[in-house]
Image (cartoon, rainbow, N blue to C red):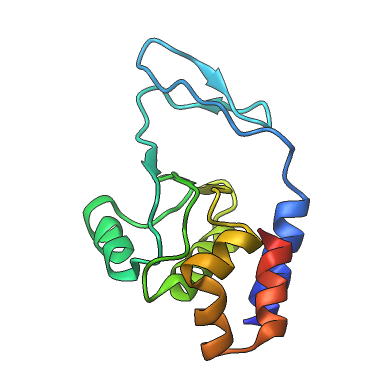
Length: 142
């Protein structure tokens, strides 16, 4: 777990400060952050507010396929808190980000903060499954 979190931190440090903006309408030719042309009409899945619902996340992957360069996703924050499997959701998304950095984009939601983690259950879940040092790494990554 610690190695995954440290790898994710390094991966996020290497990202540009702005979100990738894509217009994938059939009449548009768009360039990605590397100046490469993005295929018009390409599917881009936007998923928000998973809130620790790991089995719902797996169902989304069953319906839409898993994140990859050819099947990109934007996870629009609020990965953790409320659900019983927030740790599994976060680690799964971090692993996809590490394996497919151009196929898995993540934005930070308000639940990826120390205050919300303490209030809505993620901190307690991490401390029960691991310890405070792992929680400190999540706080740094978030």
